Structure formats: C-alpha cells, structure tokens
Image 1 (cartoon, helix red, strand yellow):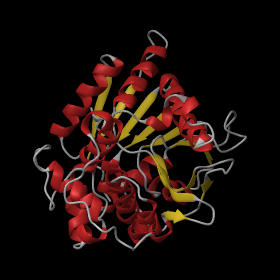
Image 2 (cartoon, one colour):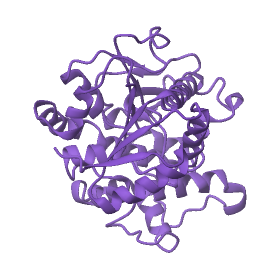
Image 3 (cartoon, rainbow, N blue to C red):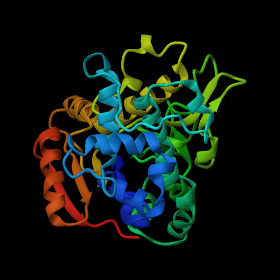
Length: 348
C-alpha cells in the first residue's frame, strides 16, 4: 500500500516540545528564548507594534509567525497602494549586519530579520532536542520506520527533524529535485519540502549559482549581505503567506533565483503527484491552514487527479479530538468523504 506522510509544525512540536513552536506560538517562543529580540530585530519589532492595531491578539509578547509574515509580504506587494512607511523603524540603521547598509526599505528589512529569527528558533538550537528524538521511540520516528520503498514524506517544516529520523530508521532517501534518481526511486523514500529548509543555502541573486543543500541548518550569523560578491546569503525557505512568489510566474525568477525556483517547484510537483497516487495518507500535526492558499489549490488538484473509485485511507495525529475534527473537515472538503481515523497526539 503506497503511503504518503504529511508533516506540519505540530509534528515537530509534539516530538520536541515547546522549543519548536507552531506558527501561532512563534512570538511567545521568541520572546522567551530571546528576551531582547526587539533590539536584536528592530525592524521586525516595529512591524509587530504597527500590526497590534491591525491583527487581533498581536503584541510584543505574543504574535503568530504566519500572520506577521503574511502582513509583511502583503505590504511589500501592495506598496503602491499602502506605501512602505514604517512608524518606529530605527534611525540610523543598526550596524550589526552588513545588509543594513544597503538602504533597503524598512518592510524588506523586517522580512530579512524574520528569516533570521526563524533560523534562530528552528535551526541549530534545536539540534540537541532532535538528537534526543533520534535516540527515542516517539510517534514520528515509529511512523517513519513503517515506510516502505517508494513511499513519500512531505514535510512543510523548516527544521531537519524528518531528515535525521529517516537516517535513524535507516531509510534510503531521495530528495525531490536534487537527485538523478528522483524519477526512479525504487529502494528509497522520496522526501519533499514544499516550504524549503534551513539547510538550503541560497545566494541572491543566483546568477548561475545553485542552492547548496547542507547537512545542517544554516547558522544565523551567516545570513547577511556579502559586498565582495554582491549577494545576500539566506536559508532557502518560503514564508507561510497566501501568495508565494517563489512558485509563480517563472519569467520573474530568471537570472535572479532560477535554481531555487526550480527546486521549490519540484517539491510541489512531486508532492502533488504522490498524493494523487497514494492509497494511504498519514497526517501528523498538519492542519491544512487556510492561509496557505496555494497548498489548498494544489491539494484539490491532487484529489481531482485521483482515479474514480480509488479509495484513500487517512490517518491523523493531532493534539486532541477537537483538533482532529477540524482537520477531518478540511480533508473531506479536499478529498470528498474518505475513511479518516484519529490516531492520537504526536508524542516524543
């Protein structure tokens, strides 16, 4: 039975604990782990203050990653209507990173700082917790161990938890878009990361440079502008925003981030193909969030491509039955009524 495992932030949160927050708890975690984050990331702090009167339940102490990142993205894309003025933006700019000397607009710098904050929270600092999970026998590790050759893991998470656990259970892995074996993965498990990964080292503009896939997450101190090469080095990740520029209109990507564009597109293409062919879908900590418009559209496309009458067994791991009912409702909207079983929470 072909199986696709779908991982969301709840899978990492359930496995590693509070140090790996879901999107809604990101601001709380940042405030706890980096108490001076408002001075470390001054443009991001100005954005959060600006959004307090625009997004409910947003404050310095508590804000949602997807809502703040989406607001930054919308502001930049709608700049001709809304403008790019940011009250409270620091002046003069900080001197802690070279990128502040580039005279970018304040909202763009807030987006850059948000990438740095994501790198700090979900990157190297999770390594010790991931290594404990590797030695343990948690829910996620057990489910990955059950995978057969030809199955697929789709992880929407930036961290490397899935990669490390797949190594621990001795699965041969082929990465979407990065191996000549991708078209024929007999004897292996296909790994797709549609939102990118903190181990993807991207150079912008690329100008012929490829995205390097490291064996570890990028260090936050390496995320910066490099004047000698006239490039910004950053993790190759896609924000949880409604309209993802990284996967649309390829003409806009040419000469700028062509390799990253192809890499991200391959993740989505392979993921949707595998879901359209799967006999079983195992969902761990992914809630099909309404903010991810592209994902909903592409999941619906995968459902439409399924053969008439071809059944799909769905198993869901969620924190409680109330959360499971919300996920089941979304699954039934996408895939029509299917057999959907609650398997309990993701445990460490």
